[in-house]
Image 1: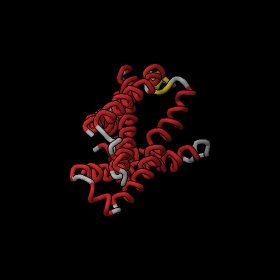
Image 2 (image 1 turned 90 degrees about the vertical axis):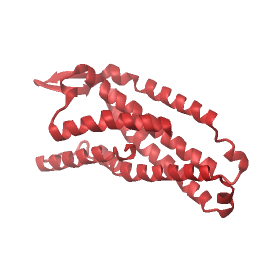
Image 3 (image 1 turned 90 degrees about the horizontal axis):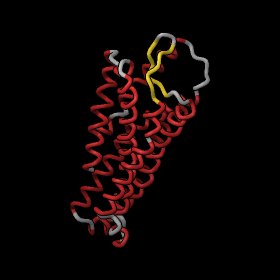
Image 4 (image 1 turned 135 degrees about the horizontal axis):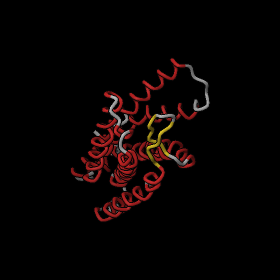
Length: 226
């Protein structure tokens, strides 16, 4: 949880703050600074994917801690958690390395744009990273393990055997699970809609409404990190 707190703070400072400046005050520094264009998105995604991974691991850990079996509960310990946290951070950093290579500030029709110059990688980020890794997969994982954790907690014999600290840890994990579902649910729906209507012909009014809703949902999705 300590690692996640640090990651969440990075996301809010780097992601939400600059998004508010861009959407609310039209101050997009990625369009004027090539280094910031290359690093902002990658740095945010490293933190977001790491946080999503740790949330999933936290949901699994809560399920293990609430198990009726003493042997299963003993599988949850600080040493394993430390290794998983370090491994997750390392994997997310390596996974995001291509972004720093392919993202660039280019001039298109006289207008500066911070875009991914590799088409295949751009599609991967849209369909795999944004839709699956940081949206659908975390929702599925935490929903499944959160459901079974609640079932375990409803068993009186199990609840009595858990320590006060373990109960508090499980409660915090369940609260985080609910927060992710509330804030990431609309973002998942938005991603699905974008994929379905990617090739649809849209008039000016529809595009304006979609842009407004997308901007709101994109900001709303920062909720779990607050």
